[in-house]
Amino acid sequence: MPLLAGKLGVVFGVANKRSIAWTIAQAWAREGAKLAFTYQGERLKENVEELAGTFGADTLILPCDVTKDREIAGVFRTVSEKFGKLHLLLHSVAFAPKDALEGEFVNTSREAFGMAHDVSAYSLVACARAAEPLMEARAGGSIVTMTYLGGERAVPHYNVMGVAKATLDSSVKYLAWDLGQKDIRINAVSAGPVRTLAARSIAGFPTMEEIVEQRSPLH
Image (tube, rainbow, N blue to C red):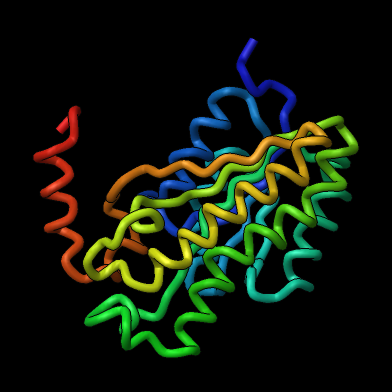
């Protein structure tokens, strides 16, 4: 029996085949989960439709701008109508303006700071709140989000994204306290530097990747 047979999940954050969210979604599907996907804007719609379509023509694919509560509510309303309940939620969403990932952190604008925290951290809170009643209806569930070492240590050029990841990490702890009593688990995975679409925005990323390859136990 596959590990996730009969489980229902929704995936936020697939951009293309290099996305960490896509790799996780493939693993969930291999283990028997039925998944719904969201996409951010028309630019990514075709990519997500092509990838998610490999799981079947009836795969649920929905638009969602995570800075808009009504769009998040719309996703979970549709998931509720189609699935009736929810077991799994993947939150693999983060963003900061490109110029905020260059130069010095001290020069981060108020707008860039707010945007990075809204998209990268608050969206987890909003998604967890919307998922809670669907997970509670089946006596529990699992929420997974993506973090990075830059939330614990100062990583050159990661700048405001590191601060946003620190906020995300703390949010995971507080959400775990709230939701754990309803048997809803929440965890953050720190995957290290991976060549994703988001990684292209970080100045000096190839150097970061090279250093990790040299120093990590698995190289």
